[in-house]
Image 1 (cartoon, rainbow, N blue to C red):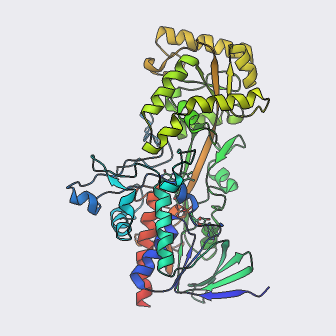
Image 2 (cartoon, rainbow, N blue to C red; image 1 turned 90 degrees about the vertical axis):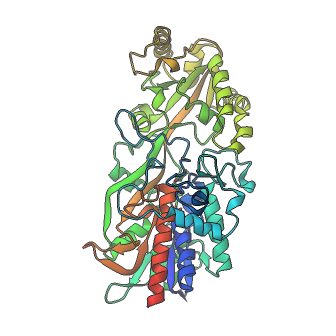
Image 3 (cartoon, rainbow, N blue to C red; image 1 turned 60 degrees about the vertical axis):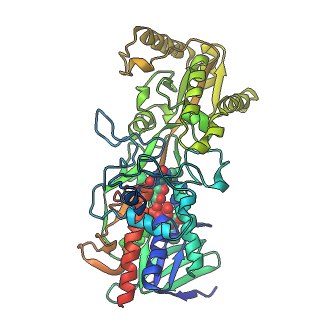
Length: 502
Ligand SMILES: Cc1cc2nc3c(=O)[nH]c(=O)nc-3n(C[C@H](O)[C@H](O)[C@H](O)COP(=O)(O)OP(=O)(O)OC[C@H]3O[C@@H](n4cnc5c(N)ncnc54)[C@H](O)[C@@H]3O)c2cc1C
């Protein structure tokens, strides 16, 4: 099949948060022709799933007389730093503390003001009474989505849908099902084009500049294993990162001499969770009063440090890296009422109220002999152990020991606070299955303050820009999605200015 050839001023690799923001911003600044290539069947990447956009010193906040108030909205598991070890507990940089390591400036305020100018932001985003820009509800068409622990429908989805709308209005083609594979360079090593694979054959896109926004490498298990071998140990783990995020463009950039720095790479890694099953159960098993046991039937951790990187790492050392959160019927009622009174977003409430139904549904699957990684219910501890496939004797001894610790009000084994020590006594008893999970892996291409890619000697590679999860310092602007849109905005601005000059 003949190769198809297209031409533009700026080619953008990846239609996630960083790529789409860069594409629209560069077109705004320069008025030049931009084309976006996207490997997946639709735009969005990991950004579609993200919430917690960090906005500080925006026009909204300034008009209300508020300065330096960051958006502290975070993923449900973002517990900030571990009190004892001062380690990051979830993999996400703690919100509200300003930029992380690296040098890229934080322009999330400029980004947010710019997005407001594009229209429609006020329908979903609000300035709350504490001066935080937040999105209290998911977008209308995603309201009934059963799993609010992640998007779609939250701030990341809004950014993607707004940018796609801008691309349509500004005549920026977003070519989906198109995987960038190789850079074409001239005799001085400048990028003059990109070769891509499409379902109709090879595509060559000639360009004067390129922005790499092709995400991170959270779906490249081999690279993850190399960087974090203790955690990527072949045991059970859920990978939430889109399967297209395999770090292709980090490799492409390396091939043409870009600097790659994995020394500051980081992984959003957490657990344990009851995922991807029921959201109310996901929430219940994160309450510190539940009792965590491994597949040997033994307690293995202080349950207070749940849903964190540290907790996930400890689970990774247990058999199969799987666990159960155990509770009796009295505790289930208490925890059910608690999760209803503490929804993460208002629109979660109807889903949380179904906690009893969700538990009954998962138990029924088991009763119908469709045994799986769901919820076990039994009238006796022996029966519960058998349903979990753990040794009943060991399990009984674990419960006896835990109940004694609860009675004494002191956790001599793992140091859980006395207020969280609740005995397992009143049947029926429940056990909720849990595993570790990862989201995105961040790190790679070295860029300067302007989002320009640097070569292995630290020299600017003219016309080549990068942002998002695939760069080495995307903690800036708040990491994750905030870091992605921040670096997309910076790189898009720089690429636009460059195109105006040449
Ligand atoms: C389930 C989940 C929940 C998250 N929750 C949060 C949160 O609450 N808060 C937060 O801050 N962050 C969160 N994150 C992380 C956040 O989504 C990412 O850090 C950020 O959005 C990455 O943006 P990006 O533009 O760099 O990459 P992406 O949005 O992943 O976009 C990269 C795009 O490039 C495409 N691509 C890859 N290779 C190629 C190629 N060769 N050619 C063309 N295209 C290519 C991909 O298909 C993808 O569409 C979450 C991530 C996940 C997976």
